[in-house]
Image 1 (cartoon, one colour):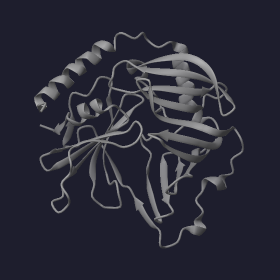
Image 2 (cartoon, one colour):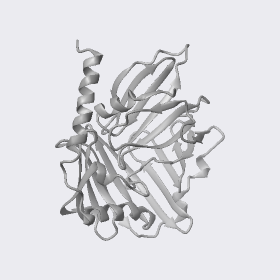
Image 3 (cartoon, helix red, strand yellow):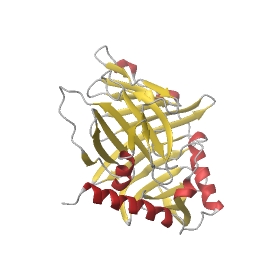
Image 4 (cartoon, helix red, strand yellow):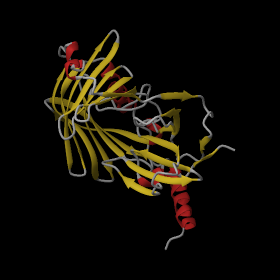
Length: 328
């Protein structure tokens, strides 16, 4: 059996190799970065509506989206059309998720969460430090001419991406997340209208079906200043930075967990730290794969369970998860 010490040494050597590898690729051209800037700005400048398809691990899911911008900001509705019914309404950073089958409503702030096609944070930075952005070809997606960009990671700590960007508006119409040559996750519009009229009624829930049987849960979030949490993340992998620290509840239970969010400018990683409850089943440490690009790593430290979740390879999830410790 391979010892924990051997695994740790291998990961350390890999980490050192990543830094050297990051220097081999050239800097991205200004033209390629300008396409990313146009893509990041597009959702705040255009109305759009249509259907898009999510594909990963042999699973396909279709969603319908309505997105409107006006003087008060952004307003959006995303409805999942396959499987369990889910509808998300967004007004700027305020989110409400409706689950009609179970008659539940969850409210929270978006913070750093990303929804296709709005996948780049504002302002976006660090992309060129961690990815080589390259213009490759022109292709049509859902009737729209697109510029295709390849985002090649400068190390093996993150996945490659391909973006199909509408030439006229900059809207992202298709994205593929790659592990080597394998597509592990993909979003793509199947039908799309840009800059059409979107009536406000389409962006509001149908109140006639909301009865007193529905349960509303406000997922409370308390933003903390740097260092307020009793936890720290040492030895972050190259290119990752802390976005935010907070306390929040993740379900309709009132128990708050500590939450630290990280990003490399494109991929995000969340760390959740919660006390182990004696009367509940003991947490199972190890690696878990969710779907597509999302990986999960669970470990325990004292009386606490540490769960690291992110759209990065397993080795990165482990490096980050194992870097969590209590502050001195």
